[in-house]
Amino acid sequence: MEKRSKKNVNASICIELLWKKGFFKDGRILQEVLEYITGKWEHNFPPADVSKALKKASFLRRTGKRRAFRYIQKISPVSKKVANIEEELFSGELVNKFGNNFENELNDLHLNFGNSGTCTAFLLRKILEKLIYIVFARNGIESKIEDKNFPGGLVGLEKMLKIAAKEKIRGIPILIPKTAQKIQGIKFLGDASAHNPLATVDMETIVPQMPYIITAFKELAERL
Image (tube, rainbow, N blue to C red; front, side, top):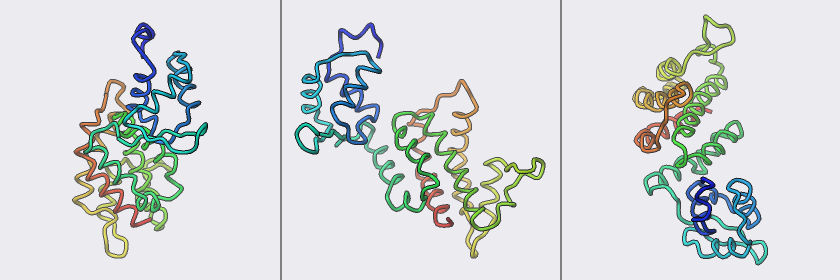
């Protein structure tokens, strides 16, 4: 938010902007909202004005007791399609299968999903690569994805996907070949976000890839 526009901004506008940023994915108390608006945007609205704006916001739900109210989004700021994908991606069943090894990555992904396509693409790629490695390691076959030219290193993700589609555990491929083929798109977007300083990835570009990446996550999670 540019400082030159401060005179045109009120507490309600700030609350809406915070909602669109995903700030209210988790419950927030009034003090947290005030600290963000003051610290990040340098607006010093009276607490009563911010409290009134929070109460009036149709996209927020108020929980808790007086003087300890928490405000959490009841309407997602992203499109319904993205919201549906988000619900499946962060389902309790899948998150539980991932376990503690992916807690940081999933928290970061949850924060950025629907808000930053570039960060989302990078994190999806990182989780995919980490999943493959852990599946191979837990099944005692990590040597199959080691880079023979660089001791201690791993082959690139594209080669990992090909190996995962060929390698079987109890007669079933680690990744179904069709799945491995379909998720090349998210690999490309993740590579662009990580290695191309001029690249910007939009959520609209990622959304069509999500059914494939979620399928891949589910297949790999079954092998953990």
